[in-house]
Image (cartoon, rainbow, N blue to C red; front, side, top):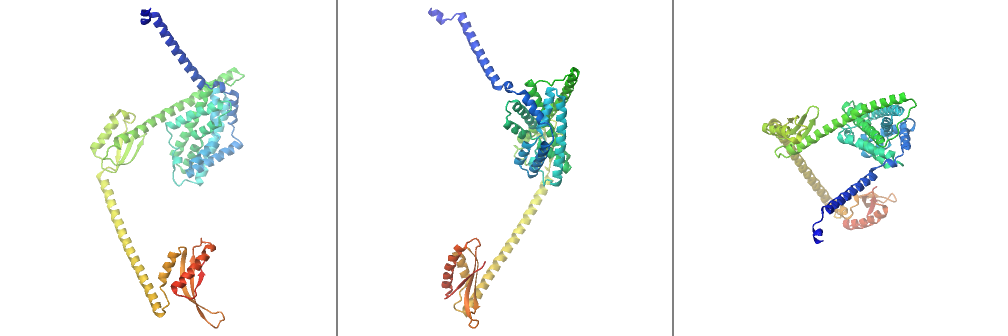
Length: 489
């Protein structure tokens, strides 16, 4: 018996193995069931409500037309002011999404009438948006091209992915019972349909067709991939196809929808591949500059750019780049596997000759000499100002000394004025004079009067006690029996 426990039979080992396999299979099935329940959204789909909601957003008339115009002007103002918040507001109120979803749905459901309505309304919306933005930027042109505008003239792979996954999120939210409004708003912001149209209008107003075509390219990407996402979600959820009474008509429309769908899919795929390749090139150019150029301490790179069409990388250096160093860069570009997408590019180095460096150095020295001359002139003027201040002070002392010699009761006014300002910082201006006065028009008296101008921010309740203190102090300093204070407004 002990030997049987120590050495299990082949049957018991086989049973143990089968139990492990059974437990593993049960675990896999449990995980599979959990994932299906987690991601399956077919049971929460409302087919009729989804179709009705999309069709309701397709028509372009009445309030929708006005909302579109307002959205165009809001987006144009946001681009003009370079305000991200205003541009986002235009994205939220724009009604452009309705016809685009209608196009995707018409392909998925073989609904030719919805396709015609969606295409006609979308075309009208695009034309009106371009015209309205053209008029706005024609009368209110930008002072300079800002970041909000430049960000919509050169789409890349991220814009394709945003449009596609945003469209998927939107349609999943649309098909759910009780549409998720926050998802719809989020997709409207992410895909940004209105700003590219306004940017295209700006390009027309300025006669800059590179901006126009770049912005329209971005709008086309968003439109195609949102429609594509709509098509895929509705097909995945097996929405019922549109029914026609005539079998031949149904077949003909089905063929038309298939052909048009394929025609739309081809440029979508082509656009994705093209933008993806351009993005790879851009990434490798940036890596080349970062890893091969910036790490060389002797290189002083001023500016860099590249042309995808001409296959050229432009590098502008402040220092001189020798022929050997240029060959090293070309070899790295051609032979390093990390730059396989740009190995056929050529490097164009600008401003790297010794002559250019000498010209910059000479100009720098000349500017330094001009700056030194300016400093010398300023120093001379400052000395003249100091001499004038000293002369004025000497003349004041002489005038006061002459008055003192004639009248022993006269005191130095310059000292009194300085002390008064120190004691009462709110005094803006002070004056003193002996005024001739007569009450009966026969006897004439000489009255000492001090004229004070206070800070206008001080209220009377504060000025009055200060004036009483000031009068007492002035009488003591000037050795006067009486003194009148006159307030200067």
